[in-house]
View 1 (cartoon, one colour):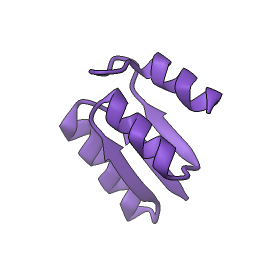
View 2: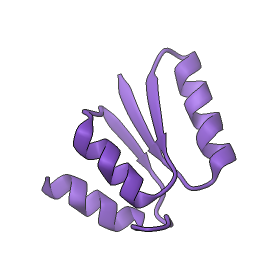
View 3: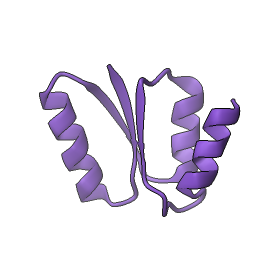
View 4: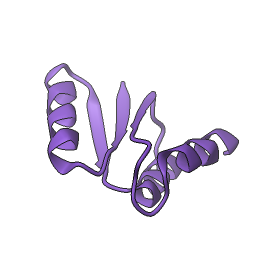
Length: 69
């Protein structure tokens, strides 16, 4: 299973990714909404963990973009 974590708090993002990888998941991290959008457009993810308050592009707008594409 491949998971994208879009979270601007670096410590939280790293901890989530580390825990998921330890359990056998592939986890990518993005620190802002635009980078998250680029990851989502270029890779197939089974799950996206998305923060609402993100720099560049907020989480709700990113969610809408992903759903529309």
